[in-house]
Image (cartoon, rainbow, N blue to C red; front, side, top):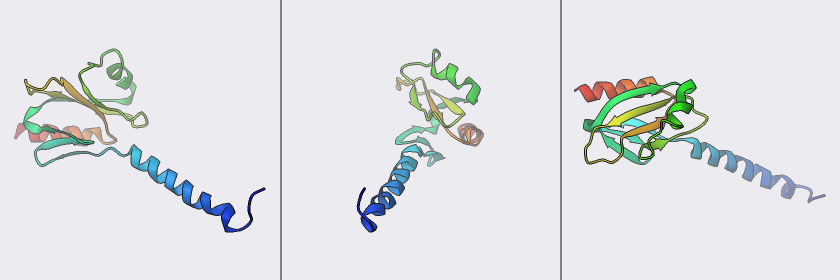
Length: 119
């Protein structure tokens, strides 16, 4: 039933923490407002093209991700994160009508976007 000693537990000591680390890294999507841009994952939107900012609570998320989702929208959705933020894109040259992304702190992101878009 296996080998005694180090060979029996070493694979678990290496593989289990490695799998946990990989899952943790895969679940992290950075969302930030800095340097005049909204940054979500690898995408960025200049703040001068930020229009209406709306926080969608977890209970309404299914509606905005389901039948009311525009296929041209930029979506970064993580199912285990409750609320999402919808940001209207005002750039007429951009075919993306809005961004929809999950964040654990939607009110902070919305407040940052609203304050920077007014200045």
